[in-house]
Image (tube, rainbow, N blue to C red; front, side, top):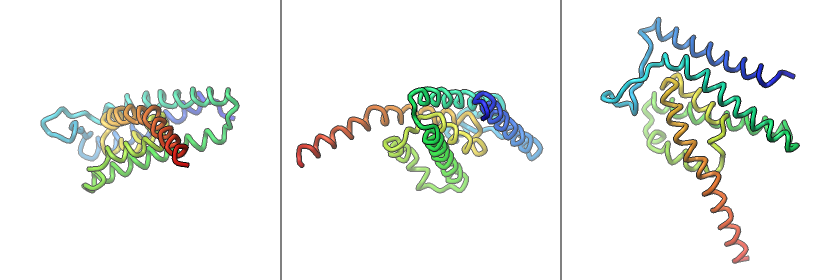
Length: 185
């Protein structure tokens, strides 16, 4: 079996190669793109060059968080297969959400764009969107449309709100519903 550190190295190296390839392609096809904060021309722009540095470091950090959670859960005798399935599900969720947002932005699909915050809030009641794998999937999906920095900042804000919802508000609502059921049954 491959060691987690080696796997982190491989995944991070792949992310770096993809980002370098993308930056190289941009460089030779009109120049490396910069993205204005909130898509407002009067706000500062952030160059995609930052992704070459930030994205591999961010990927390594998030993979380390996943590894740490895996080690904690495996010490509690939880099933490895179940952990991997949950990790992949959350990665795909984050990636799908990021891809849907990026495609909606590129195609100017307003109904989705206008409800992004609501979608994140609803998903926060169902899934732990603050988990590293969900964050990583989201950032990787959005990087090619928005660069690395803006998706990282956006998802960190949304993941913080999502953590509050999932850890504190969701259990409160579940307990309240259980008490109501007990009362009326």
